[in-house]
Length: 362
Image (cartoon, rainbow, N blue to C red; front, side, top):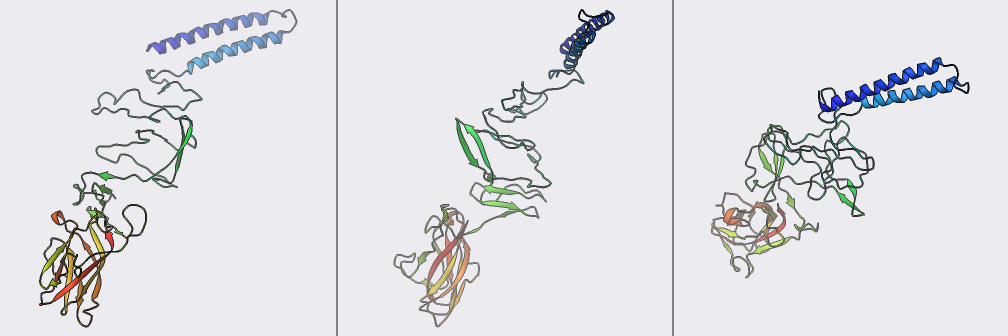
C-alpha cells in the first residue's frame, strides 16, 4: 500500500469514528424529553444536518483524486493544478519514457509557449497553437505517415482559408493560413532518388523549384507548366520577345544567312528577355525568310545532334515575307543549359531565321 493510500484510509477511519460519536449523541438527545423550549424537532434537524456534513466530508475524501503514483484502481491525473481563469496546459514532464531509443523535447505538448492570453472559437477535437519558431502541430514517423486526418462530413485536411486572432503585447494580430511547401532538397533536375509507393499519391518540390508527382505505375512525373506571365510574381503578362534575327548585324550570325546542312547553336537565353533563369524551355514562332530555295528548318535543344525533325517546311513564292510555324522546345542541359539549336536542310540552300518567344516552360 502506498503512503498516500494509507493516509487516505486513516482519514476515512477518523471520520467514521466521529460520525459514530455524533450518532450516539443524537440517540441520547432523542431520548431526552424537550430541549428547554419544547422544540424537539429543531434539535433533531440540526444534529441530522451535522451528521450529513460529516458523511459528505467522508465521501469527498473517498472520491479525492489521487496523485499520478496512485495504486491500481485509483483516479489518475496528469498535469498541473487547474486555474479557472487561465488556459489549461497539458504536457509531459519528462522526455521519452525509459526503454525508448530517441529523446524528444516532449512527447505531448499543447500550447507550446504557454504565452496565449486569449483563445476564441470552439475546440475541435485537438487544437494546438504554436508561436514564434514553434509548430502548432508536428508529426513524425520512421516507417509510416506522421499523421492521419479524416472526416465524414468535411474536408479531411484544410490548409489556408482561415484567420487566427490572438493577443500579443496588447495588440490583436491576424494571420491567414497558407499552403505549406513540401520540399526535398535531394530532388534535383533528374527527379527524386527514391521510388514512390504504389497506390499512394505523393507530391515533392525539388531544390531547383521543380515539382514532382507520383503516378499509378509508382514512377515520378515532373509537373512543368507553360507560363505566359512574368516570373517576378507581379501577375503581369509575359511580353513576347524576339530572341534573335539572323538578318540583324547585331544578331548571332552578324547578319549572315544560315547554310544548308549545318547545325547552329544559339544562347543561352535563360535570364534574358523576360525568360527566368530556371526556365526549362520556350514556346513561340520560328520564321524562315529570304531563303534561296524550298527546304525545311528544325529547332531542338542546344547541344544535341539534329534528331531528324522538321519544324517549318517552306518554298516559293514567299521567300521575301517568309514562312512561320509554332514550336515548343526544351533548352539544352549541362554546358548547353538555356541554349537552342537550328538545322537547315542540306539541299544547297541558304536562309535567314527569326525566333519569337511567346511563353516559357518552368
